[in-house]
Length: 289
Image (cartoon, rainbow, N blue to C red; front, side):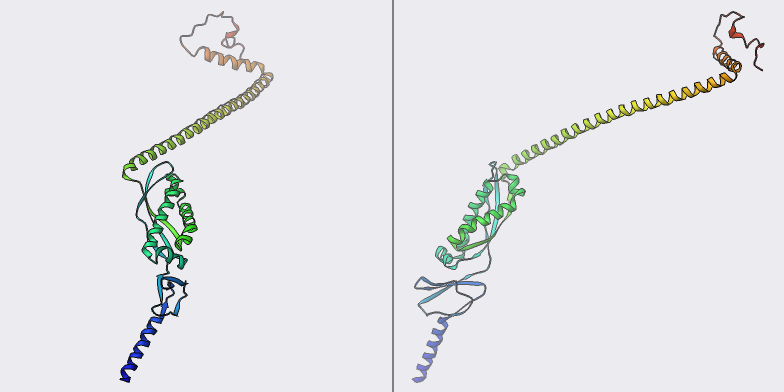
């Protein structure tokens, strides 16, 4: 009889001990309830003691979790629809508030967070145009949305949003072609603007080149005339010097040149007096010695 009592006491001690001890891991967050009321929040990792059947411990995953939001359609600043697929990284920040607001249900917390992310994306995308959302200010959009969410999620849900990212941005099928046509039109307009500016620059360059060519031509003609004048002056000086040295020989060479030019064609006819001074050297009497 005593043996059964002893075994029963040992079993009772083990049951009570097993229900009195609990472990919180490094990757977990926990709260202690007493008849449904929180009596201890944010229990530190380690082995702890509770009152069996009086205290209840709720343990939650304290690691960074991912909430993958379903694809949603949002309007940009120019009233263009975009289909956005996003996700968020979050973790429990305030265990007490998390339990109060969600009942400790991770799925409920993720669902409420997804609703707030969609609302935030709607506001952020609605304040930007298509170019800014797709490329220009995409990082700024995500950062602003993360900061905005943390202003309310910690206090309302006990959650800290680590990061929000957009996985994909697509155009709806019913507006995709119109957006592409508009983009093509804008690119053609920009191309035409560049071509017009290029043509304007080309006209200016050609006009300047023609002006410089005229200037260079005029300067070259001026220099050529100056050189030609100097050459003529030198030639005249040489002729004058030669003439002063032997005037008779100079007159003879000039007469020979005149004969050559005059009688170069057989059809030339001259009516001159035989005693004309033009035939002076043809008579042979006055040849220079």
